[in-house]
Image 1 (tube, helix red, strand yellow):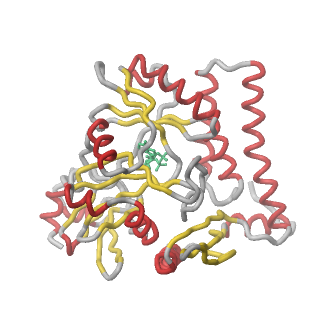
Image 2 (spheres, rainbow, N blue to C red):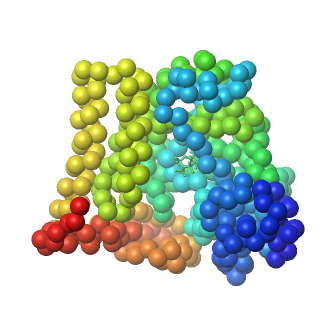
Length: 375
Ligand code: ATP
């Protein structure tokens, strides 16, 4: 690989190829080699990919900062005179689909996911899109109850589906404006997240508050606010999402970091303070928060005590080969997978499996057997 040439194409903030390329990892997919930036470095996003045989660079998806307070957060974040588009933030997983001779789906950290690639080829009109826009990347969320990474239910999505929330230049990562992206998605029949409205920063606070109330009541995740040009983005989430994520983390208490938990508690506290909650409302939030911490943890302890496998449960559905490839892919990432069922329906293979949470299982077993804990 000509590192000097790629350094220039990537536009990294270092002149020294070695400084950047020591953070790249070589991987392969379908006999093809690609190189992945494993951490954000020198102005480049984690998950940035170079596919050498196609001489192609695919920039990573940028990290989206979060607001803890809407007022004055939205005003401080966006320029005066900006128009803020308020879109739903969906809870699935991020995937970039780019054409490197064939369309491939890359996860946030830059793995080619064989399963998501097969599903994208099946569910999206990629050929038509890439014929017209070969140099673009589709940025999408795979959502629904049947995916290998997330399980959130969405009304009308029985298994899984893509929602396209960005169209970017493959090499520079520059986004299309919100309006252009929404128009392109309509042309190719790509589903996209709901747009709650557009407003100047001052007025956007109310648009977001209304959207958050509605989303919270429906148990949905939150919003991403975007400048109309698509280059500035910030996110904000619902109480329901904070509680769901805490329940998720505490269902496997020794597999999720303390930072994960503390950040969700901070979001709750700032939201409750800003929304002027007191009395019964604050009491209710505290109660729900406590339930999302204690119930899943007690369930996990009881499950281990009963000899059950604990971990995240998933169902996947697709053609047999892509499902085999998915399990190879997950096992290559050192995951312990237990299959719970494997059946066929309408020519598709449907597999239910658990990503075994070994740390939680082993630590809970240790304490249940009377082991001590050093604190
Ligand atoms: P970070 O963005 O800080 O790296 P993260 O990986 O934990 O954080 P999230 O907190 O889930 O990600 O938020 C960002 C992600 O939200 C995006 O990467 C994208 O996958 C997802 N997302 C869902 N809906 C949208 C949307 N409408 N616009 C942009 N991103 C969206």
